[in-house]
Structures are given as C-alpha cells and as structure tokens.
Image 1: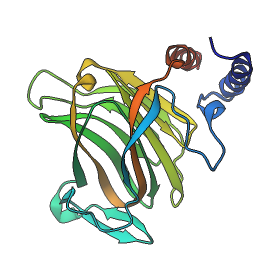
Image 2 (image 1 turned 30 degrees about the horizontal axis):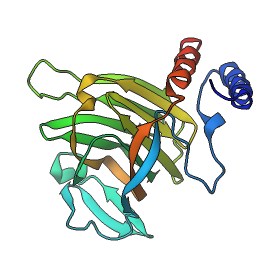
Image 3 (image 1 turned 45 degrees about the vertical axis):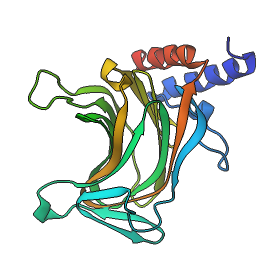
Image 4 (image 1 turned 60 degrees about the vertical axis):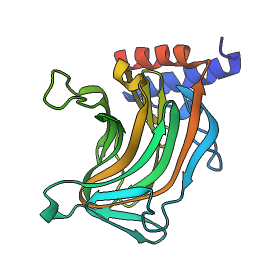
Length: 237
C-alpha cells in the first residue's frame, strides 16, 4: 500500500487533473534541484553520463543531418539534400534502463529518441510542438510486424525552452514522462529483449540536446498501483 500521505496528495492531484481534462504526474515531481521522479522503475547504477557539450565523440555515429555544438549543447538540423531526417546513434548494449536528457525545439517538426536492438528499430518517443508519442516500432520492415502506438500525449512543447524527457524501460514495459508532468506508457513483448543502440533524430530545423544520463533500472514497487490510477484517469477523460 502507498503511504496515506502519498494517497492524499495523489487524490488531490487526480481531482484537479480530471477537472482540467488532462492527467500528468506532477504529484511526483521533485523540487527543481532534484532529478524528475520515475514511475515504472527506480534509478540504479549510473551507466552513462554525457553532457553533449562537445562534438560527437567516436562512440557516436552521425548518419544524417548536421550536428554541432552551440552554446554548450548539441545543435541539430535536417539537411534537405539527405532526403532523410538527421540521425546520430550510439552503440550501447543494455536491457532495463532509465534514460534522461534535455532538449529544446527551435523550429524542428519532430525529434525522436530511438532505441534499436541488433535487428533494427525497437521503440521510440516522438516529440512534436504539440505533444509526444510513445510507441513500439515496426521491427521487421517488410514482415508482418507493425508499429504500435502506445499513447499520444497532447501538450504544448514550448519552442525556445529547455524540456526534460525521462524514458523508462523495464521488461516488456516502456514509459516516457515530459518535464515531470505528462506521461505515456505501454507494453509489448519485443521490448523485453536486449537493446543494441540508441540515438536522436530530427526532422526540420532546428533542435538542441544536452545532459544525457543512463541508469540501470530496477522495479518500482508502487508501479502496478500507480499504473492502475493512470489508466483510470485516462479512461475518465
């Protein structure tokens, strides 16, 4: 059971959120000096820390687009001649993790955080000026598998401002939260397999990225109860 004090705070937040016609996770948001709270998982050992304040190192592969450092952060834009969104990827084998990074939109149509296994696309979070999508990708290209959208979250993503995205992967489940407030999640068996690499993409011009962190993920004992309340709130809209 959750502590009674937590339950009272959650119920108060839920009533306000439903009255407003939206549901976020600000009941869990920490103060500005702390990391955004996680829901599906708990942060464990820090596996990777990259402030993204220098040109992409050898561990990163720039496949498409223009990626440079501006004002201490990666600044990215799609190059029209590429006929493909800008892409930068990092080889990094992992299983259950928590990703966190900050981004800023300055005209980009879409930017994604994309996760692959050894065979290809696995899952991603797509960010747009009017919200974000959490989805499982098409995993076999021309085969029977299809992309599955877990949730589309409609919320303004203000241009010219830094936002923080947290992505939690644990077993077959995936959750993304934006600015410690809006959350989308889902599950699919394919997500449970070992991951091989991750990266950023950008469509249009421009976006910036900084402060990438990756932690091992361990189960959050409160997740099933929290998930039930999130599902209930979504159904009540």
